[in-house]
Amino acid sequence: MFSLKNNLLTISLLLLRFILGVAFIISSIDKIINPAKFLEIINNYNLIPTFITPAVVIILPWTEFICGLFLLLGILTNSAAVLIIFLLLGFIFGVSINIYRGADIECGCFGLLFEGESIGLHTIIRDLIMMFFAVALIFLNKNIWKIERLISKKIISKN
Image 1 (tube, rainbow, N blue to C red):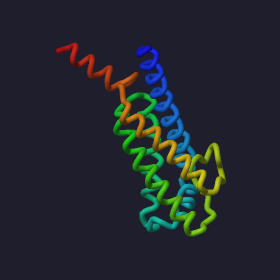
Image 2 (cartoon, helix red, strand yellow):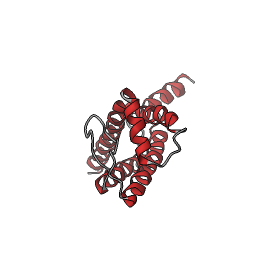
Image 3 (cartoon, rainbow, N blue to C red):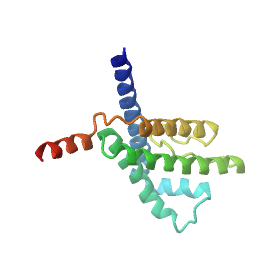
Image 4 (tube, rainbow, N blue to C red):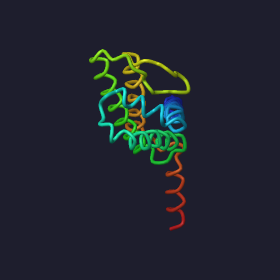
């Protein structure tokens, strides 16, 4: 019975890593391909000084992409999950402020899947669910199918 429980946990963690990794890769693609549109979306949030937004347009999507890729490949998964939590906290903050302001603006979250989607409570709920996934990955980490685990085993076996 313990083995079945352990296998279910293993499969669940791999599934969470896959879902979160794919979500962040998909989220980044449209932003990377179309930075001008992403710049407009960021400026619509009216939270960041406009002289900083060009740097955000470059850094944010690549951070999302790399974190998602690292989760998929099992590279520095805890670090990627922590960074994703901070990104999601920032997203929740930005969306919450603009919902409070009554702004009807495009989310800019998943351009390829939900192009033109306005922000709303559903955006916050989706981000909270992804944050839960990231927290679960950190606290239930079992080093399953991680490249870093394979590398450390090879290093130890050589010594």
